[in-house]
Image (tube, rainbow, N blue to C red; front, side):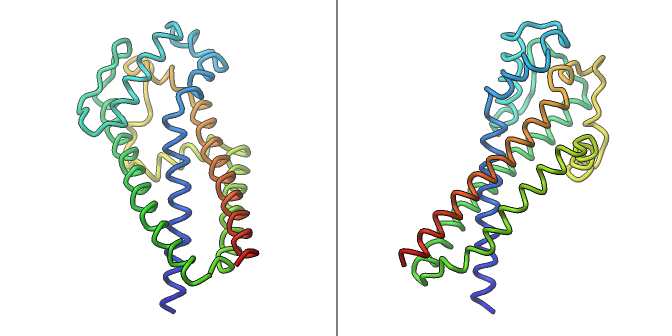
Length: 210
């Protein structure tokens, strides 16, 4: 029973590590947003040039990423108290993701050391197959009904309506259309799938050589 629990927590650590790393990469992958400025016609929606939009986006991302930046003040996008509060909550989620990334990375290293010592790579194959199936299901849901998923996501992680922005008081929402977030969700799960598949083949190779 103790060994099964160790492996269960190890698999959980691996999944959380890959998921949190995929999220961290995606939220900091500015080229995706730069592409979407053109693809989603964000310049026309906001009335600002691409350079101005990117400058404000970088200010926003610095606030969300860095714990020591306590105040959000975008140079060209005013924000209401409700909007600022929502970004404060988003900042906490960013920092939570980084914390999960750090803890799960340490736990995964310890777990893989144990697996190597016990020559237990074969035990990982079926759990990895299940992990690989999960992103495929998620991607299917995203493509089928992202609107409902987007609302459900906010319902789970935010216990208020501050995320419902009014473009008159929080024009930044025009620069962050829902389709951009859909692209972020897709990238997260594509990365998750890719890394898990690579990990599966790495483990399978280990099984064959041990």
